[in-house]
Amino acid sequence: MAERIEKHTPGPWEAETRACVGSPDWQVTSGRLVVAVVSGGGDLRGAGRRNALLLAAAPELLEAARDALALLVDFRQERSSMRPRLRDDKEEDPPSPVEAALALAIAKATE
Image (cartoon, rainbow, N blue to C red):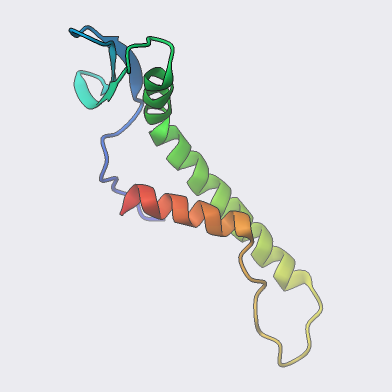
């Protein structure tokens, strides 16, 4: 299998508070590189923190989504190949809603 070349900053990413005037901000970093700055909204434990943590998990979530999709596709194809078929029935089972959702999320993250 060919090695995948990512277009995003490689992980792991970390979320950390960032000193600023007014309201606390969070930054998501990869080593010394700042990947994103997230407004804290005035609360160190609020939505800004949760958004930064979610962003920091993005590389791992993308890889997990790819792995899960590959597993589901393999399972569906194996199940389709084992099912008795009529001689002229060559269709595979359609993708599940979970496969479709994973494929859309992966496309959204990688386009």
